[in-house]
Amino acid sequence: MPAVTEPLIVWISSGEAETQKRENDGPWLTSHVKKDSLFLTAAGAPCDFRRRTLTSECFETVLVLLGLPLFNEALQDVFGANVVYARL
Image (cartoon, rainbow, N blue to C red; front, top):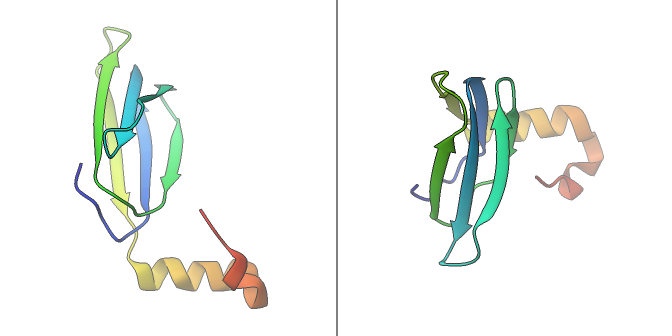
């Protein structure tokens, strides 16, 4: 997966899988994901990603890249004067 500058929302819309991710040839981090799992990730370095489905159900995901202006506006709305401390 290439590096992106925008925050990324990942929603698992169907299926179940074991996923693995690593950055910069580091250790693989394993997660078990299933329908209705939701993730919000920060922008960062390129990473390797792989998955293994665990059921016969089709594994489908929805990926949404959030534009930085919209994301920053949402942070401001939620954190107000403390926005400088907000982190993903």
